[in-house]
Structure formats: structure tokens, C-alpha cells
Image 1 (cartoon, helix red, strand yellow):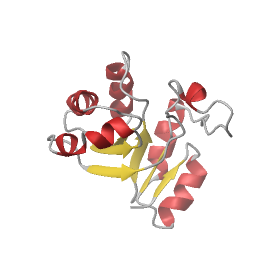
Image 2 (image 1 turned 45 degrees about the vertical axis):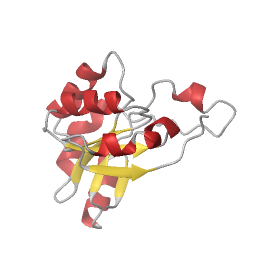
Image 3 (image 1 turned 90 degrees about the vertical axis):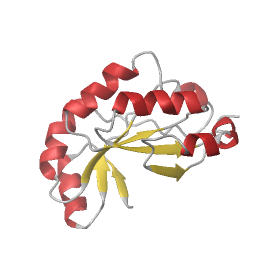
Length: 146
């Protein structure tokens, strides 16, 4: 799967025409500045207000977003993305089966769930995590946090 993180509808349309599979914003910001302190920060300025324009620019690609890790406001955050038509949601920085189960519960089958495996705690629970109903994909990533 080729994925482009953008909230630019013109770039999204070009990428869609080029055959990119998933296109959409990177909304992961929660605690990211602390995790990346002292490093070349990779925090997007993507805005949820751009979702309708990005969605309209797509003919073939699925609308995608990387969310924040599970937190107290996850339900409202995910409802907003789902209402905007996002079809694929990526969960970053999870460390436990419980976090993934909560995310899957909130998505409730309304979008594909992609897990971004970045944390040692998650790797240690990987068999249990992958056994959960509602997990569609696993993406192995890297992290800057211990």
C-alpha cells in the first residue's frame, strides 16, 4: 500500500491520479513534541478543515488519516474523522492491547484500522493485539522515544 500524508487537495488529486492507494492527513500531535525533543521535529500542520477538499480530490485512493494515540478525547476525535468520510485510520504510539481494543471499539467497523507498531510494549503484546477483531493491518514503524 502506498500512502501519502497530505491535506493539500491539489497534491492529493495528483497522487490519486498516479495510483497512490491512501491519501490524507497526519493528525498525530498529542505529546509528539516531548517525544521528539532535541530532534528534527516531524509534526504536521495538517488541518481537519481540509478533509472535505481532500476527499473531493480523490477518485480511486481511500481517504486516510493518522490519529493521535488513544486519549481522553479519542471518541470525539474519531467521530469527527469518520463523519468527514475517512476510510482508513492509523493508530500510532500504542503500547497495550487495551489501547488497541479501545481504538477498535471506537472505530466500530466504520473504517479500516491500521496499527503503527512503534513501541516495545506493543511488540511484547503483539500476538494478543493481532488476535483482536477489527485490526485490519499492521505497519512497522520507528520511534524516537525510549
